[in-house]
Image 1 (tube, rainbow, N blue to C red):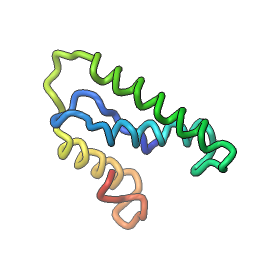
Image 2 (tube, one colour; image 1 turned 180 degrees about the vertical axis):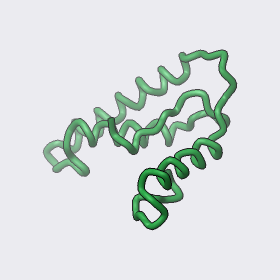
Image 3 (cartoon, rainbow, N blue to C red; image 1 turned 30 degrees about the vertical axis):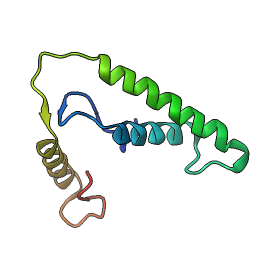
Image 4 (cartoon, helix red, strand yellow; image 1 turned 135 degrees about the vertical axis):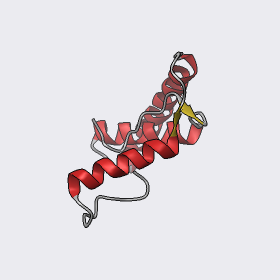
Length: 98
């Protein structure tokens, strides 16, 4: 699975359309092998991103859980600690966005 695609369900505050779009874009980039498609493939690429984003939004709006919402800041800190343990303190893979 693509490391840049993060879980989006059951967070407080809820997932935004921008987060859904970003995850959809990463997914389409991964399966197509294109970071940026050629002009010949641009329309199909963009349409796929939009369709995946629409399906993901429908999914996010349909899912239910009894679990309390997760805190985004706590999840970011846990990921940072996992990366620190895995890669060490001087590794360039550590970033504030993870």
